Image (cartoon, rainbow, N blue to C red; front, side, top):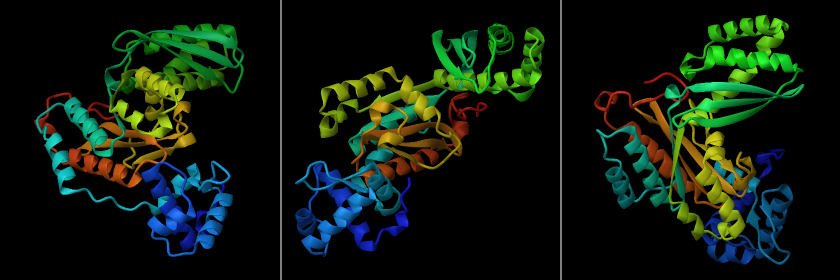
Length: 371
């Protein structure tokens, strides 16, 4: 992000860590006096203030008011998460609750994800989400490519479980004619209606390129580029149409001062209720990646979440990806506890009963063939 994290001394690291954890706990700016009395920082008040000023200058802290203490910036939270966060130790009670709520060895995947979302929200006290993709069963019934300008196309798709209408604005790095776009509509309907994601392959695209070049009389290379860009947009949209997202603990947002602003709270709740923007954001995460993803503030694709954090992890059952789970909360969330909870959930789910014991057709690889 433009800052060399290795330039921080051990003293700066300890002060930054103490400020992040104090702000997570208090929700208020943190001053040098508090750090001396409560933060176990063995330095003088003047030394702490100087270090805080330097950390602010480096971009790790912010001072909301002239006479107030400091709060972590996005960069400060990112450095804390990547470098300073401690491992969270689950209590015996928490571990027992987790096992009990996940005791669905013969249940459908939907029930596993539902329970996991409830567990995640209850144990972290934040809003939790689960994503269950079903792309292999989604098809598009009708396409319409609309000419919007020499470099712009609007692709309209009708499909999904409820014949929902989706549109994609496609920006092109080259110019197209209105006639080419009209031919594109015919080719999309000829080759892609009733086709699932799993059936979109290179031979199909080659056939589409040839058909488009023949129908439009345009250069085959241009047609190949146009088909490639459009099919990518259609693939992403079908992923979104096929994804089912559920939330748990939305009311927990009210417990944090970051969401006390009614306008901001209403927009956040609207984004959760409409789902599309959040589905689009999490669908763009590499679904084959096993690592926990952390999006802090402006790193989030959803604009209304620019002062929130999304932590997200794909879930596997005996090595098969069955969905994903996420946590939404303020930037000052308890990262240690949230990361530990998600990791533990992931581990427990992967250790459930074998795939053979589950109902037929209930396991899906995300964006790939049925498991």
